[in-house]
Figure: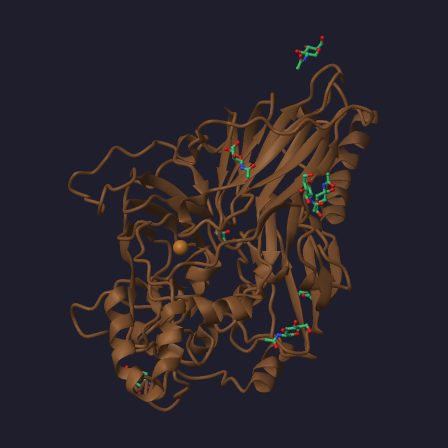
Length: 585
Ligand SMILES: *[C@@H]1O[C@H](CO)[C@@H](O)[C@H](O)[C@H]1NC(C)=O
Ligand SMILES: *[C@@H]1O[C@H](CO)[C@@H](O)[C@H](O)[C@H]1NC(C)=O
Ligand SMILES: *[C@@H]1O[C@H](CO)[C@@H](O)[C@H](O)[C@H]1NC(C)=O
Ligand SMILES: *[C@@H]1O[C@H](CO)[C@@H](O)[C@H](O)[C@H]1NC(C)=O
Ligand SMILES: *[C@@H]1O[C@H](CO)[C@@H](O)[C@H](O)[C@H]1NC(C)=O
Ligand SMILES: *[C@@H]1O[C@H](CO)[C@@H](O)[C@H](O)[C@H]1NC(C)=O
Ligand SMILES: *[C@@H]1O[C@H](CO)[C@@H](O)[C@H](O)[C@H]1NC(C)=O
Ligand SMILES: *[C@@H]1O[C@H](CO)[C@@H](O)[C@H](O)[C@H]1NC(C)=O
Ligand SMILES: [Cu+2]
């Protein structure tokens, strides 16, 4: 009797557990300007949610449905929300990318995101409208895991965000960045570094406990070196992928990367300890006098004790994420079906400004969001040509092993992010290695690290692999927001006919209403042509190329000589202000 009863009860309790986990978590977000002064140096407008900034953390449990009702109360800008690192499997239209998977949410208008989350870990959400998130629309997104393999190893969880901060507004900074007055493409240098969108943060610690620190770099530009004085970090997750535990004294976190570490507290509360985020200044062309690249916080064991200033470290020797092993030990994809090669360079176009290129093409968003082109072109959706001349598009078939070879023909460091997937990082060269040579193929790790954002070294290369098991239009782009604006973006159109099977006729009306308000067409090729899909007349294009042989300095001279005749002395004043330093790294 007892035996048959327990046999009967067990399946019911499993069923209940499953029902409990599949909750719907709803957030109502009203996006508007508020004022904040996070570094104590300048009060400025920032983009808040429900009148608050920093914006809220989104928290769900794996398996939950997440509904986010967004209202745009900015008044003077469109907006969107992208959930960085979530695969959006079957819900590509919820990925939140302006001009790619939707139209920008118009001022005064609303937009509902509705999707399930089937992956655990540390993520974040941010605007995916040109240049917008560094004005403050960026926050953590945590997916709790009932089956967390490290659950027994820690007592408490602490979320920490790292970021860079500008006193100027992004729209103004972008005008100066992509400009004939900035032919070398020098990126605006941040004014401060922040932790949790503030400085001098205190983190209360109890002796003997072990903490899971979920750390997120939500910055626009700078990578952070991160360390905790006298405490070892044990890495257990990167970008939502669990790893075999690995000890680290210092991390390097690029914009958009996440790392979770276990830190075991001391057994006594004799002193407090500093922790530091230090912005990597290699990418800063000119370091302004007085810039403090560091943000300090403290592990506070005892409020009554002093918070010691951080000790200076004499060299940065961060942990190399290439050496990590994913906890599931997913094996190397050793057979490649489809190779995509992307050669990155920076150069000037004939408006004199500096742009970023993949394979000599700088990204300019299409007139019709790419997903809507997929959904409105029937069998022609498999033809890459219809997606335009400036979108760096690649069409993938089902279940291919896709390899992205990225050659960095630029002396800068770039963190690359792929939407819709985590990829295997199968190779990463050192600095100055030049282009990847598959004939001199290096030996790949047997169980490569997987993540969704990875650094390529100066004039080096990376090789990434993933399986095309997720129909959708997914961007692949540098996560330095300046470089997104200057065109370092490719469009992966994965299984267009399967996207149609999932989503044709299912785009919610509120999505389409925003296009109407923005005056954006929702059908046809990249130019909005529905009759002849190969006719791209009127599409959005980049400025033209320069005559051969022009350099950043040359363009300044060219513009100077052409315009000088009209503007006379005024131009000499303007010319004197232009930063003409050639970009060296
Ligand atoms: C943090 O502390 C430093 C050093 O005392 C100070 O210069 C800075 O203004 C503080 N930051 C904030 C936001 O209060
Ligand atoms: C939008 O409004 C904010 C807040 O009033 C203002 O600071 C900002 O300059 C405006 N931006 C644009 C592009 O008009
Ligand atoms: C979200 O999607 C589910 C499944 O399609 C649907 O049942 C539900 O009504 C939707 N919720 C909202 C708020 O749109
Ligand atoms: C840091 O910010 C996150 C996200 O807002 C919050 O959950 C966390 O409690 C903050 N940490 C501390 C120590 O205040
Ligand atoms: C704290 O004490 C426990 C139990 O005595 C010991 O196992 C552990 O190693 C100590 N931790 C540290 C950081 O010293
Ligand atoms: C920032 O931290 C680094 C590493 O400890 C140190 O070398 C540098 O002097 C610090 N800068 C400032 C302005 O404190
Ligand atoms: C998407 O879902 C399909 C079907 O369930 C599955 O086979 C595939 O692995 C998923 N892809 C990702 C990236 O989650
Ligand atoms: C789509 O492709 C077919 C076959 O290639 C072609 O006949 C047709 O005209 C195309 N449709 C449009 C709207 O261009
Ligand atoms: Cu970049």
